[in-house]
Structures are given as structure tokens and as C-alpha cells.
Length: 254
Image 1 (cartoon, rainbow, N blue to C red):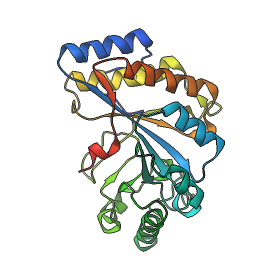
Image 2: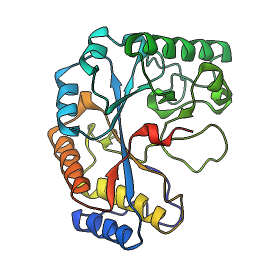
Image 3: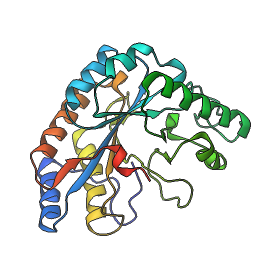
């Protein structure tokens, strides 16, 4: 979840708060946009099929691990225009000595550049059309490697939103639905809605660009029933409100 400088980052909310925030967007003449990223895809598993069923026609950005991706995944997604393929690193291997990262500062620029180029080339061979966005594993890319992105054909970086300015174009996620330090289940409805409402309120109040979509992050391989139910309910709420819509990540490309 991103840091909200003027809002309580730990605030909770319920569905009435979410609808109330969308009503305020509508009264201001704006439409709130949200986008959905899911990580760690390599094959058309039952878990991924379940995710696609929950998402329905909503745009979904699927971060695929190039080195492990199977041709069967590309075949299963063929014709699903609402699914955008992102590059999820190269092999999702941890090279970090402190925090987990595939691209920590300990690695050489030549190695990292090679991985980024190889990943993009393999996804293009498998899927044909991909979106030139890097979603680094564990949402970490050492800042010194950001200059390598254009050379690898990558137009934007997608990680967890932060305060840090400068660097490459960012299409970040803001609310991760997984409680990684508490059993890797759902973070809970109040926390999820609190994060989403807080991000939307920040945009409405002009504390961040009003046109920037709020990113939701899921991981289909560990998605539990509670997370699935929340994602489905969120989709229904967005579809049912005139001042909200899902945004395709391709809309945000520079």
C-alpha cells in the first residue's frame, strides 16, 4: 500500500464508504479509475482459470514469468483482448542478500540488462503482443538499473507506489490484497477498502493526479475464497456505479 501523506494510511472502510467516495467523484464530474494486476503467471492452472472467471470482462494485467512461461498459457489466452501481458522479471529468482529481489544492487548491470532483454524477447515469441511494462518480482528494482529499461524495450515500471520521484514512467499498484506477514491470506475487507478509498480520496482532493488509476494487486496462485469474494464484489460495485470503471493498463502507457 502506498504512503498517503495527508491521510491515515491505516484507516479502514466499508462498502458504504466506498460508494460514498464514488458518489463524491460523480458530484465533482469525474470518474474514478481502478486497474487490476495479478502476478506470477506461468501456465493455465485451475487457479488462473478461477481468476479469469472472477475478472470476467474487466481488464486484467497479467504479470508473466518469462523463463517459466508455457506455450499452453499463450494458447489459452489467445483472443482474450482484456488480458494484457506484462513482464514479471526473468525467472523470479532471488538474488538479494537483504530483501528479496531479482534485481538487487549486488548484481551487475550487464546481467540485469541481459535478463530484461531475454524476458521481453521470450514473451514476444510466446504471446505476440505484450505490454512493455516491467513488474519486477517482489516489486523491487534497484534504482541504478532503471536506466536499463528503455534499452530493453520497456516503457514503464509497475511496482508498489512510493513517494520517490524521478526515474522511469510508473504505472504502480497501491493495494495488495495479500497479507504476506499474516498467513498469506486476505488482508481483510476493511483494510482493502480503506486502502482503496484512501487512494481515491487523495486523487479527488488533488493530492495526487486525479487521472491516475488506483492499482489493485492479486496473486492467483494463493488466492483464497475471501480474496476471491472481495474481488468479485469490488467488480460488481464498480460496474454498478456511474462514477467508476476499470482501466486497461494500456491506457496509461506513455
